[in-house]
Length: 286
Image 1 (cartoon, rainbow, N blue to C red):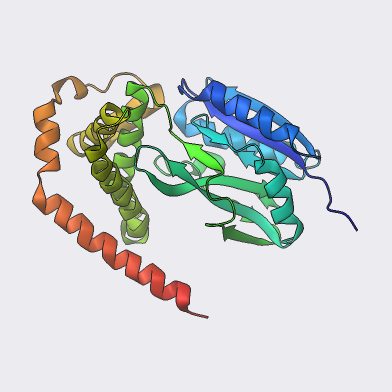
Image 2: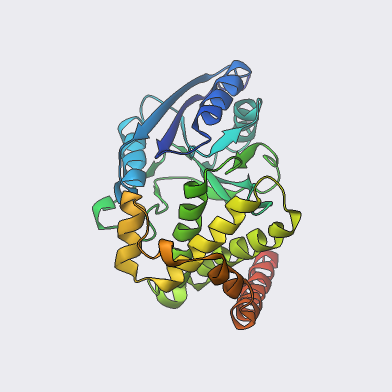
């Protein structure tokens, strides 16, 4: 029996990302090498809190028309054979309902979470009551399992490969908000220190002094801005994408002082390493 062709709906949220046209073209190119069907829709004009909910509602509305749904950010692009590989992957894993794929992040030069692929066996409840900071909750699986696939799609998805200056700043601000917020308490600590890992990798990538040097500095400045402001102002800034009021007061001197803050970086390294060890131990348990 042959492999069942997928019917794929790709959903992209757009809020001025520099990479949007390359994102769209990459979907077109990948669809040409694919025997199934692909539809790509772009959602725009939705604020940060409502944006992910709009994607999840679109998935639930179309669960009878498509077999698979991809949440593809506007600052991502896929390889020419991505859909073909996706079909091959799912053909041998019919138990799978939620696939998470790490993507190559150009600013940090590392793989981060990532792209999400869903089947029609997922649903979201109480989207209006979700967190204001963690705006993209995992779905409830009506059947099947969630899998993080770290190897099969390696080098198939690029992220933030040509960000504008403001895009890089807001990217850092968003990640900094997740790191410095107390929401979720100790339960969110592992996730918070994933944000530190990203920040630290962007900092290490600064030494390359390549075409993304300025954007890396702006990312770090955005992360630092999240440390300096109150949560209400930060959420308003991210929702409306207006210039953060404190940003005009942040200078290269502020950035250099942040980069030289040994206590911050040493503490972050220590806690991040501890969680890495715990994750490794848990992954070895049967």
